[in-house]
Image (cartoon, rainbow, N blue to C red):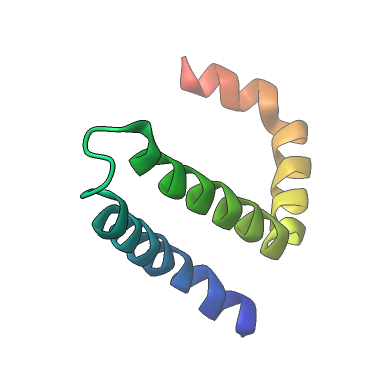
Length: 77
């Protein structure tokens, strides 16, 4: 249950961190790469948290994909 709550909280956490970082950094660094760094680090960190939370599902889906990859690729084309 905790994993599910955290998984649904990842997107609002990203939005809050990015918005607050832009509001804090924008007056000092207008039109700068510095505005992109907090969003990059936030998205990357939460991406790895999400992978860690759902690694059992990813392992199961990867096994399914390996078994059916030829059929799935043919279906794609």
